[in-house]
Image 1 (cartoon, rainbow, N blue to C red):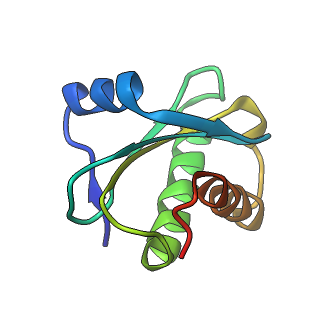
Image 2 (cartoon, rainbow, N blue to C red):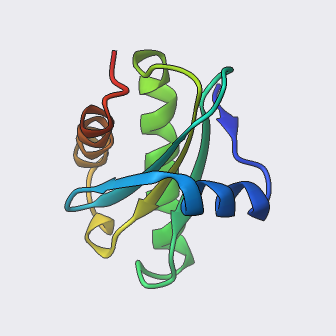
Length: 109
């Protein structure tokens, strides 16, 4: 299992100081830390859809991170923000979008 970003202050720190990359479905904001396991936060806005849709997108993101966490270098705080285009996508599409952003950030082993 992966570690989660805890509170609003941690999210704000990553948003302020991190670097972001985006693709069609997602935006990934990454902040390097000293050490330790990666910590993840997920953000799915109301613009994406109703609560059922938002929760499904969040579950897909969590599953993709859980599956691929061992392939990422450690010591990062990562926020993954879903774009409106992520609504209704399959797991394979979301998973490949997460891996693509990790390649762009250079954290894929």
